[in-house]
Length: 256
Picture 1: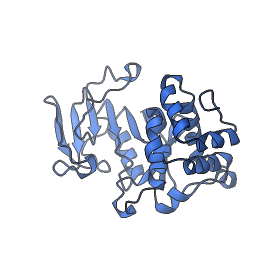
Picture 2: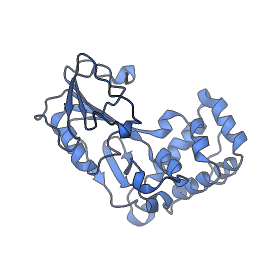
Picture 3: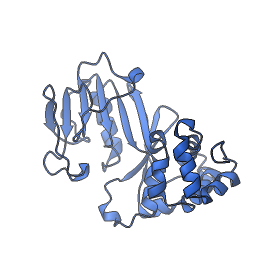
């Protein structure tokens, strides 16, 4: 079962809702909301698992069948990148819950995996790049073929463009720590939601682009001494990435 870090767990929550639990629900959940209870196409065909103490409700994240403030905690992991109307889903989550946790794939993972994806975009399950600005704003940018190929004109955007070009990301992604590959967002009360029509060029708009966070996630992962064996494998297998890190001033002790 899924668990949060010890210092982040909702110990005093009595009513806990998980949206989209799939085959691996959140530890201590009391209510499960699932849209697809039979086919499981978006959970890899795995059978839905419902703990004995939990109640299963069929519904959608954009239309939660609960009253205001019913839940002490709402857990939504790898759900919001799928929905057509993420702002509506976030509003519904805030309406029924007092606090919660949201997790999605990070833009670093999403864009890297999609760049050489030969699957037709019509069959992509994930609709959005999801990231946070600061600790309180959740941002959604559309994941379309054009946006997958687009990079901000800033140094961070151009660094990521060259970094992806220096390796086979589908293979290299295993060298990066989980923190680099996920967007994690804790909230209490409410939080601002921004749904952008496309990626923003920070040099033109004056607004933060997604690539600053992607660069930070990548460089921090390359500095992780606890995963040094994987970082060194990355360096050995894809030597071109070392030159890119050096070019943009992001060389680390492990990739110098």
